[in-house]
Image (cartoon, rainbow, N blue to C red; front, side):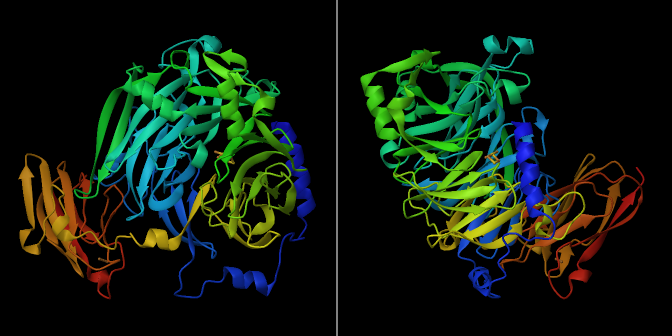
Length: 631
Ligand code: CUK
Ligand code: CUA
């Protein structure tokens, strides 16, 4: 496929280069559609994955203004995330401290199939993890590791009431992990489909399903009539472990795996799950103590399909399906066969009828394979090439991205007729419509996330930012209205009406609710406590001074913890703290919060410290000295 892609890419880009700004509108109409006047708010929040930056970015739509980068899997100096003592445990894994990941798919929590603005989840591909971000604070509060996985790609898609977020492994691996020959792939390597229970208080793995050693790519859960089911795409049903670009593309059809998770819950309560060894950490940031803790787990509950009839079925789907998307009614399951021009749409009702009649093509490791013709609802003959992902609007239309032919195609759900097509610059991967994978899409806009930027912006050297393109989809024809650059590689995104999130948004942490073990609530309580070579400085900040601001009695080799409590109780008045030579970045402490900077002074001297966040006209005066003496 890679060579094929290259050929198409090169030709597509040749056509577009040479100063011919294809797709440029230059029309006042488009400009007014994206114009958000100074001081006005955008209509939608868009959460974009940061790809290999490991973070999530927040944009306003339709303006395309970048509002925030939320640190998730990577250390972030701006906010001290993963540097201060409180948040370091969030990046712990069973492999140690892993302050980086490759984030692909943001997913909003849902109630009755509609995004509810409580949380947004995102997966880490590399060291399999799922994070949860609390949308009252826009801070990461949970990171859970997914064992028996490699390349946590079909993740973290939610069920209709956020009962679970799911995860399917891209790489099959020995299950449980062990030292075996790679050539023993077919005997020893397995896939895992994980269901992670979502509770207010935290995340945990409810169960995993042991599945054949394919590659599990993407997922989406059913809704409405198909509530209780989750669909995962698979490719590499050839079970090849080398030269996959050729070997994993032999079979004409791979599968969409349909999992009945309600049935899984029955089997679980009947005690049918087996405990398998699995090392994984569950990390939780507590917003009352402002402190994260890691909890280690050593086993996981596993369901085995051959022992659990009715748990999982395979739906044959052509040409290495990438995305799987369920329409707002829950009836249609769209398989985006990436090596194809056509889209395959399965019917949920037909699937249930086929299961009822028990007429199967085959059975693989206890998983019945349904007959293609029995479940097929229709085919979209798109005229495009390389379909990847599909989202839906509020009017019964679907929109699919085509990577190779670099376009979005609009089609009618149910008649499969192509209604419109719009080129993307260049090579679109995912797309996002606000609410577009839910029961009630808001529609209105479509964001195409493009892999190649080329000539769309001022050159920034050999590397250009990835690019998003905003389309107005309120009319019959899609209209391109804005280009904006993105952070890292945005694989997927989620959009939600701004007021749904804003109604719960938190402006300060009340100081009297701060339960940090080293918080102090008043400047009169500041102190320095020494125990052996551990020194704890209890410090406060309020405009425009630190207390204490002259510190003596510290020795080379001491382990110094500066516990800074920000006494401010006004919205948007953080104070920062940095110390000359300290390696742990800086702190950025929100009103009412406590954070800790750890510092091991290296040599005698007097070390200035200062506030890093411009907080008042006397911000430059907000500073102090720490004297360090020889041992
Ligand atoms: S993947 Cu990037 S274009 Cu990781 Cu969702 Cu399809
Ligand atoms: Cu506090 Cu600047």
